[in-house]
Amino acid sequence: MSTTFPAPDLEFVRPRMNASGSLGFAPDPRGPVSFEKFGAFVTNPISARARRVANPPSLLAFPGGVLLHTGHPNPGVGEAIKRYAAAWARSSTPIIVHVLPGKPEELRKAILRFEELENVMAVELGFEADSSTYLVANLVQSAMGELPVIAQLPLSRALDLAEAAMDVGASAISLGPPRGALIGSAGKPVSGRLYGPSIFPQALEAVRRLSEAGYPVIGAGGVEAEAQVEAMLGVGATAVQVDVGLWKGITNNRIGYR
Image 1 (cartoon, rainbow, N blue to C red):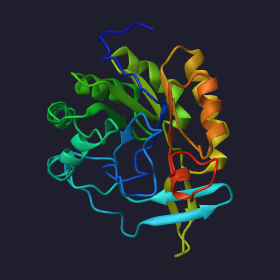
Image 2 (image 1 turned 90 degrees about the vertical axis):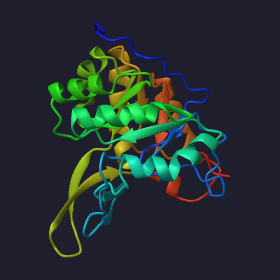
Image 3 (image 1 turned 45 degrees about the horizontal axis):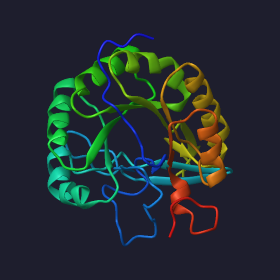
Image 4 (image 1 turned 135 degrees about the vertical axis):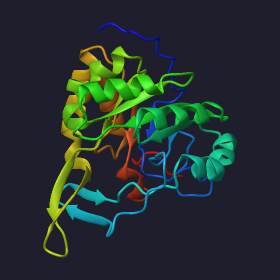
């Protein structure tokens, strides 16, 4: 595995964090989640231009998880910086900005703006399930600069796409949720991202295989309890992201709750 571009260092004091889309755009110190166990806070996805919520948004339950379809609503890079940069700077937890890549030139401009902000430790690029190796390499290369780049690859294709990301300088691979479809309330199929405990066995296997191939990997997918965090760390994850497990209430084995 040859590296064309030097990857900036990416180290976590604590190997736990939220997944993008689970806790908003900035840490809320008054909310139900304590960030004392977190090595980073990952923002909701941010795109070059504002995006509206899907019409209609969907949250559909199935045995073992939920399907979520939102359209990744966000205010766009410029407005997000205006609204959240001060909160990011004040946060006791380092910030990872999750970016929806778009066009290479737009991505490059966004990265330059994020590099100027206090307490931003890395950017995470969220790739769609149909991304090609060329697209992954091109966008990761466009994002290279002072901040480490994490390539969030779709769970089902992470092993196929990891080399393309790492060879142009990504500092780590993270795992994005798989996609699926359910019949919605209108009787029509709804496509969206899948979350929940049924995803965990696939995610653990992906982490194991990526780690064995020599890739630094941030595990994610169906993680709800401390034992699952430890399982992912045990098969080689450098850190672990928690998603809808953070929404499920306060119990003794949950991660990050007060």
